[in-house]
Length: 208
Image 1 (tube, rainbow, N blue to C red):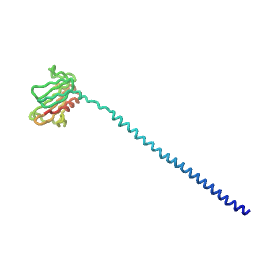
Image 2 (cartoon, rainbow, N blue to C red):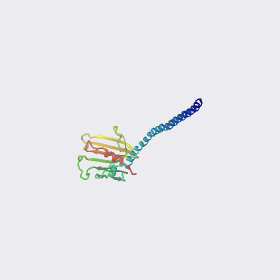
Image 3 (tube, helix red, strand yellow):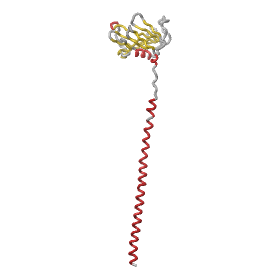
Image 4 (cartoon, one colour):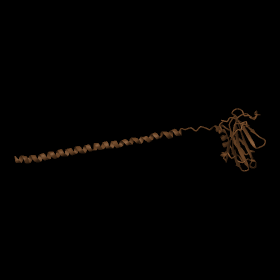
C-alpha cells in the first residue's frame, strides 16, 4: 500500500503541474487580445486626419473668383498737348476745348446746345484747368489732403449758396512746377454721386 501511494503522489503532482501550465498558456493568449483592442482604440483618432481635407474647398473656391471690370474701363481718354495733361471721361459726355489754353470742359449733357447757366436735371459739368502758380489762389482752409492723379494736392467740397446754378461742387487741385492743375466738378443735384469726380481726377496725368 505504501508503494502504491508513493507511485500515485508523483503522478498527482505531475497532473497538477500540467494543469497550471495550461492555465498560464490561456492567460498569455488572452493578453494579446486585450492589447489588440487597445491598438484599435488608438487607431480611431487617425480618422481625424481627414478633417483638413475639407479645408481644401476654400482655395478651390477662391481660384474660381472672377474680377469684374471697373466702369472706367470703357471711358474715353483725352490728351491736350498744349496744356500738357490727359484724363479719362465717360462715354456719351461732350468735350469742349477753349482757345485760352487754360482749360478743357466736359459735361454729361450736350455743351453745343447749352446756352443757359442752368444745368439740366442730373447734369454734371467738369472743368480741367492749368494756370500759373502766381495766379493760383491759396489753398482753402477747409480743403483736405488728396491726390490729382499722381500729384499730391488737396480736395474741397462746396455747397451752393443759392446763386450758383449747381447744388454742390468738388475740386481737386495740385501744383507741379510753375503750374497749378485742377479738376472742378459741379453737380445739379445735391444728392449726386461724387464718385465720378474722383474717377476723373484719378485718371489725370501730366504728359510733359
